[in-house]
Length: 226
Image (cartoon, rainbow, N blue to C red):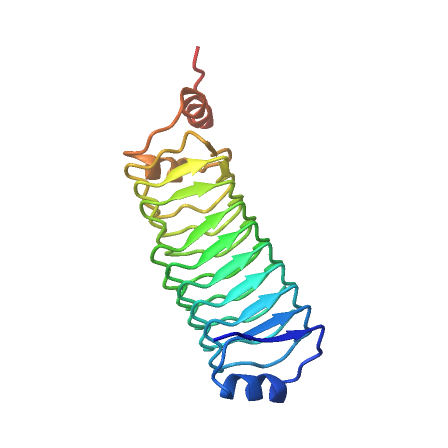
């Protein structure tokens, strides 16, 4: 079924609801939905391309398999939204709320996620690549067994995260909160772990680190490696 395509439209809640009730796939290109309340709507498989979604509300909305490409969505609210297999590419998602959202198998590529809140999200097999997640809240997020590429997780809240068997490539955990995070089997050699607190260094038990990283950790104890 060919999607309904709307280009360069300013939409209100009524217009979106009319499209949603039609039950057909929809593609929005260059449309403005800023500050719209789209909570609880069924928008599975919708495509949002170059759309303005700043401060829009998608709380508890159904967005399974939806695609967001190059959207400006800072401070949007996806609390408890169903985002299974959703794709976010090149989007501004700074300070977006994904709290309690179902993001299993969702993909985030080249997105700005500074300050985003993923606490309590259902995150099995979600993937991130080339994203800024500095100052993000990811408490309890399950990354187990994936490869993380080019992620800035500096200053992020990573308490209780599962990083077992994760391979880090060109990532940063600098000054992140790692309380009760698990790293058994992880490969941290491609990671900036500067600023790790001494009480958090034990979280790396069972992980692989480089000699230079080991020296950095020991320097926190006031020891010198020669």
